[in-house]
Length: 521
Length: 107
Image (spheres, rainbow over the protein chains, first blue to last red):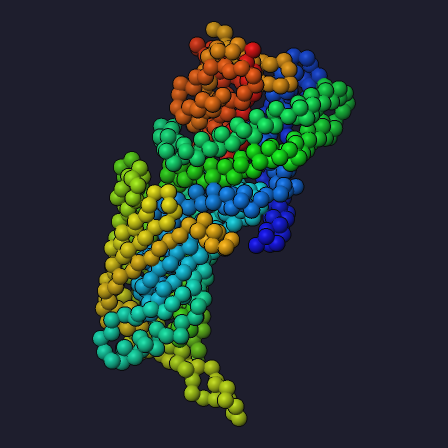
């Protein structure tokens, strides 16, 4: 881990330069560019305005210094890296019911009847019990949003697109919307209730020999912004305790950093020198010369940050707090701005003794603030599944079509210590093709004891509709970033067995700090 | 009505004022959606208006966390003490901005 991080930071800093927005922005020019014009910069009456424009405390100046510092990385300690990672977790918003942290509905271990409208940022879920599969299992799902991964690896240099950012660069926009999930079967468990001996034998077959790696998914999320946002809605949003507590840390870290830089005599001298140089430029001096003076000032401030231990520490605390703040702000604004989301998801599934399958899914998600901080979430899915390989069978490659609908309601106030969300959903699947099984071959290669690859066997009469209903409760502790989904599912059949099934699904989802801590050990 | 804060002539601060005098801050923006969400000065933190502080001795940073719902919104930081109206700073909003940090010197 220690050897890998510097490499990753170097790589990420290079990527940061590639995807950074507006590289032409120049320190000091973004507030009052007129004061730097030939006519104005030498006038005595403009001296205060010139000094104000060059101060490190201007909202657009510090990010430029920060960008420079991160491109010439300071040495972050392991503890600081861990703190930064933990702050990223504030993006994992337990109050939101439209996040997909666990496995999809097609997994052998899932608590989800539908795929949710927003990919989780960084999450780990352990879930037990299938929903529409004949086979049940215990599945671990690792979810990672690519923008958050890039943000962490670049120590904050690559920032995810903010919720309100309408002109986010394409690279960052793609990273922000792309979430990758991998699922692993951690232990094969029970199968469904079987009505006949032959079905028990079948369940026994498909319920064994499960691969450890059971699938990978990739999804892209697209958010629609609400127009005509009311100022009162924004003010109320920014008065939430979850936002204000993070903001207090952020403001305090910023205050400490600016105070630390400002009290450094080298900063005062660099500022004075820059002002003198600018005022001494001639009318025929070009912007290139002016920009060089501004660049020199930016580098001087970056060096002050890097070369003075207390200021370096203040900078690192600020960078860390800034990550947390952006997460809290996005969370606050999403409630106001992002009313609905459309996502497209691809799932590759590896199933025991069945051909690999691919799912293509469209996901629609809408959230409505029902009563102050109580949220009603509507999620709808439509999808299709194909066999990646027919293994010699003549059945249709198009395996099934699905549609699902779910309502989630946050039953408790966000102020409550124990958070509870109740859900109800309906899932419909039509099996267009019969189920396929990969039966073990008894043939051996001539003259050897090497078994030939198994042949597909078609399960007759498995086409037709599947109806599934689910009731679910998700419990979580405020501030803990872990939750326990408990679900009861009813179905008229599963994908391979035409027998009704009543089953329980449960799980535990963990936040990234737990994973990060475990990795460090 | 005269404002409390005056432009500082040295490089050590942005604005200055008499120690113990109070001043009030406000934000305005072209879109009307800018909000001042948090203010911190000399150990005093405010989360809602009126955004009033008292000038402390030495140079202290006035930190203002300002947000808007519109990209590129022109935001003005103003002093509005006793009805005065003085623009202390102005900038175009983007979500990647840091807070505003004005250095105030108590005299």
